[in-house]
Image (cartoon, rainbow, N blue to C red; front, top):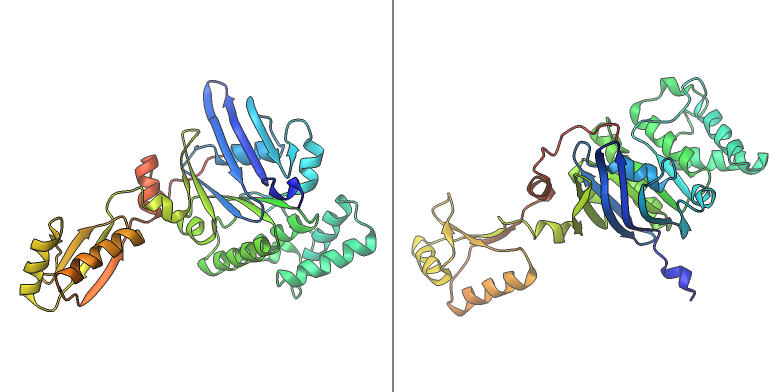
Length: 319
């Protein structure tokens, strides 16, 4: 195997960007493996869109190094552009053209041979369930159809890395889930996805790794499970059938506290398998019968609020 196989899809070191006196990115380090979904979470003005613009060569960084698909963003912008696709916050489609005409135009811009371009357009219309609407003006499309067409346009050039900047903004729940499945299918084909979003459920559903961006800095990075375990508040809820057993368990476990249910206890836990096994062993050693056990851990909402101190639904700005 060659070294290139192990090369990350995106590698960022010490990336900095300011607009006037306002520091937007303040020394960002990120590594995104090939064929994964990496999600960048952040509140209003955190720098998510600025990061995408730099990595997609739309603007330059003030300092630091960035490589995408093995190419230096600053030194090899044409090579980077040839390897990536970008789907922004708003659909970049021509409303006056039909869906098929939009795809044909994009194929021409990619300098595909006429036959190849038409074949590529037909395949993408089928893939994104747009065949019936292909001959209709895009102005008649629903929001979900427009976003699917927008992503289809991104795929005309067969990119290895796709930047999805708030891809499901404004979509209804069904359309959002359809977009999630499309993302999963792309990753299954080996494409790398760099996703920015404020929908915490979206990051939880899709991302292999998540970075939380706050005031231009990455304040946490890891899997969803790793991030949630960093936040206090996790516990195991034990429910019992006998009030006397509750008292026995309370004395045996020490740190446990009565739940709102008189027959239930809350035991602090990080939700890990090791801590859960330790708890179960303590219960079994004392022959304490438990009617029901459930694990409760903080979710990404809690992580986001704890790390950024901002409402999770705060609107994103142009940056």
